[in-house]
Image 1 (spheres, chains in turn yellow, orange):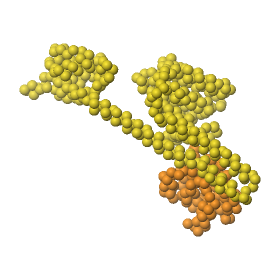
Image 2 (spheres, one colour):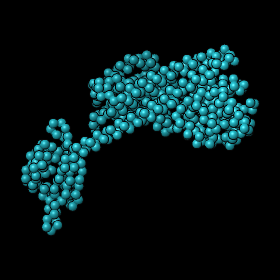
Image 3 (cartoon, one colour):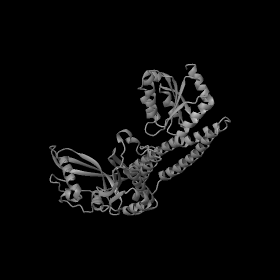
Image 4 (cartoon, chains in turn yellow, green):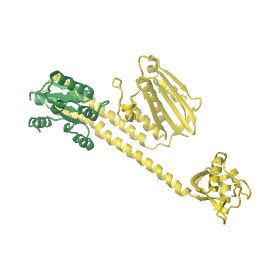
Length: 339
Length: 136
């Protein structure tokens, strides 16, 4: 390109790149900027002008192909000097680095997956050594004491009751474990288009009794983004856990309102769950909110499983979840999926 | 075994009962104070010390994994208490955890006297009282 960014010459590979990636035929004398897509033109102009000023540039860039695949290029702009060492033009050089880039991305994905698995393994070890061990320890303790002939009837009954409770707890932890292991498996199969309003409607029916007797208002706005392709049972469980948590941890002195809204922008789909309930002290317990068997309200029944499962399920669907909360004002969960 | 006070802190109240019964059967001591929340146990230590200005030798069994204040947080707060309370309270971690990292962490804390894995047995209890008697 000369100083006006008109094409002076090109080689065969450049011609091929232009046909396949830019879908335009290169021709001498044409304005180079016009070959790039509308949203990249300003950027390219600036960088080419910079190169003319003596500042070379390089970057990696992705171009979509007509067949739906994409290729990666290592793109360089560098100035060309004449005999007087004056810049009289600029060269664009491209190297196809698709193979390296693809394996790099693949490697990142594998690393991510390994980290995820590692975390799951840690979590699993924790459950085994703490939560599974706990009822077992109680059962062992009881069996020792039951051998003691000096126990009163009352003491003996207390021990037998404790034995029953511990056995039940043991079973619960085993059920939890199998659920957790199930979610941490990868799930690409069984995807379908799921309507958010259907999920909410279904959950309202399931929880009808609690919603009606406590006069809970659920408002939902899904007009902007009403559905997504996903694993229905997981998203259902996410909605169910968040809604039932809002009911469980509601304030009793005001009417409970749960708002669920969805939005689509910047290639992201976001679903927001907002309530006016008890809230969680995030400064103190923020890092534990999604932890397994972590609980934040003493006087409400719960096992500390719900939010752990919500996070695990959102993540296995490829999304992320965050929250903001204030004590006695309410909690807001934000789920984000990239489109 | 007179002159000893016993406290058990565990969110699992059944373990508190187990502990209480074992102490009663093994040491013939009937009074064991049990708490399901660490905060309450700390409060109890402080108020009973304030009342008398002195403190009997106390054996305190402490669970690690508890909601709200867990065993580690309990130890942090305990460390800020009056030195008389600290000197006369023997904290024994009583955890169901078989994770060796918990034990290592507990042993680094100078306020932790012993680390036991649940369930507590009469043999362990007798040995413990023997050690405390010898001033170990």
